Image (cartoon, rainbow, N blue to C red; front, side):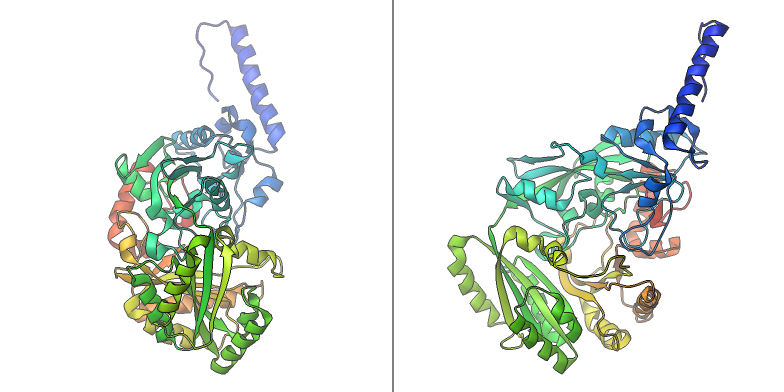
Length: 520
C-alpha cells in the first residue's frame, strides 16, 4: 500500500512504514494465505477483521441449494452493518483493473449457482441481522421495514405481533427478503396481490459503485424498478419497506381433484378472475399414484381414495385453495364456499378440506419438510417457467403427455395462473405478454446418478417450447449466453443495460447470473 510522506523525518517515516507492514502481515496471519485474486489493499480497510479467507469458510459458500454448481470464492465478508458492505464494494470499484466480483448470499437457495462468485467475495447477508432486534420494524401505517437479510418467516412472526401480515408470499418462507425481491417472489396469493415485488414501497440499495441509495416509485425510481426482479445486477438490497394488511386468524384449506386438464385449468382461471373475494390463494399440482402419499394433508383413508383415482387415470390434478377468515365469520365462509363449489368441475366426492391457523398455512412447506424422511444431499435440477394461457394446452400435450409421459413419479409439479395486471411492467421481472399466464414448476429431487438425465429433460422441454413458438419466460432463469438473456428480457433489455452501466458499470455484482461477463 502507498504511504504518503508529509513533513516527517526519515526515522519517523520508516517507523510508520514498519507499523503498516506489521499490520498487513499480522492480518494475513490471522486470516490465512491471502488470495492472489484479491488486492492486498483490502487488508488496510477497517473491515479486514470481518473478511475470512480460510478454506473451511470459503467451502461453505461454494455451492447452493441446487447442488449442481460449485465455485469457490476467494473470501467471505461477515458484515455487521450495511456500511461494511458499501466499504467492500467501493474498494472493489476503485481497484480497477484489479477489481473483484461480489455476490450477496442470503439463504443460499439459488439452484444454478446464481449467487456464487468464483474467485471473488461472498457477502454473508445473515451477519447483518445476527444478534440485532432493529432489522425488522413494524409501522402503525401498515408497512414493515425489513433488512434484506431477514427471512420471510421472521418478518411474518414479527408482523403478526401487531395483527398484520404481508400480502404476498413465496411457498417456502425460509428465504430472504432481498433474495426473493431480486427475482419476483411468487405463490398462490399473486393472482390477487401480485408477486412480492408488487408490494414494496421503498428500498435501500448498495449499488455496484458502493453508493447507498434509498429509492421508491417517486425517488430514484429507475433504480427502484430495476432492482425489483433485477437478479442482483444493480445493487444489494439492505432494507425493504413492505406493504401490510390485517392478518386473518384462520384458513380454510381445500384440495379439489380433477382427471381432466381442461376442467382443472378452467376452474383455476375462473377462481383468479372472480371480482367477488372468495379464495385468497390459488395453486395447482399434477400428481401420479406414487406422489400421493407424500403429503400429510390427507388422512390415511383419503390418501387411499386419491391413490385409487390416480391409479385409474395415471395422472390427476388438484386445485389447492385457501380462504382466509376470522372465527366469527366461519358460517359465512361455509355458505360462500358451498355456493362456489357448485360452479366447479372437480370429480364428485373429491373435495377435501382442512382448517388451520394462518401461520401454519403459510409455513406449510416447512412443516411438511419437518415430517419428511427425504435423504440428505439431494440435488435439485429444477425448471420454473411462465407459459401464456393461450398455449397451456399445447404445453400439456407436448410436455405432460409427451416428454414426461413415461416418468413416474416425476416429483412436485406446480401449475397455476397469474393475472398480468397485478405485475408492474416497469420492474425488471420478465413475464409473457398475455393477460393470464401460468407458472409451471418442475421440482424433482435427484441423486448424483440421475440429475443429468433430469437436466437433459429440462433442455428437451425448453427446445419443445422454442420449436412450437410458445412465448415462455424462465423464472429463476439460467442462461449461458447474452443472446439468451436478450431474448429473455425482450423489450426491457435496453433499459436493463442502461441501468447496469449507471449502477454497476464494472459488472462487479452477482456474476453467477452470467448476464454481464465484462465491464461496461
